[in-house]
Length: 322
Image (cartoon, rainbow, N blue to C red; front, side, top):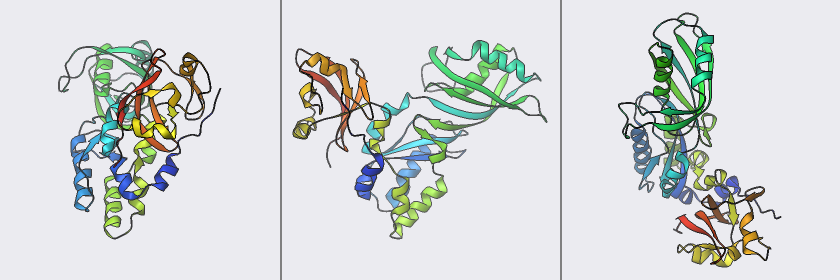
């Protein structure tokens, strides 16, 4: 069994220049009510570009409806390639829903317990851009926080759901189950995967950071940038040897002998236990892992565990050097 040095995001951030950070980083924006997710992404791109920063592309990690507020991560430049890796992770929301006639908190809680926890089938709403076919989604938690005492039709709630779950539709379906129409009054996303509201930044503070940069002070802008290497917090990490970096950056697969700390003589044993970010972990064929050389991110790889060829994993995304 082996241990490897963890990836240190703070160290990576400290050692990179601002230009390097802006090439491969993420902003955790606190989206206000009104703009679309695309509008927010475009606002970030144009604001940075107007400050003289090379900003070729931005993209958001998961759509929020215009009226919905909260956590909306925005990828910058080459970090846009990471978007798909973050989308499927759990989301957490707080909001208020309104039923169209009075009912008790207990009635709502019992309905949730019976029908709206665990795996459910959900059809996307009429206005969605995806095909309207039923799909399985998992509701991790669905808690009624409070019933409004002035208007007992209104209930505040908190829910954690699988990525791709429509909260507006969840509330509508809850109303249908209770044979009472229901709709969402407001909604805020408080977490999207590893990104949470406590670390999000408002439009105003983002613009202030850019203004500071234009005045010669890069500290505030640097502070709000999250290195793309944060992907190491959602996938296990393997460390590769110095002498294989060059070939991996050309898109070659990782072989078992390319891994640091793999002392087993059996390729099969090598495939079973690989040192991760902070512990030993077991790898399974088909899972995604991150490859690093010390603190240098190489890319995302899919484990194939081919003992005959000696290939451990094939590249899914490789971060080419600047």
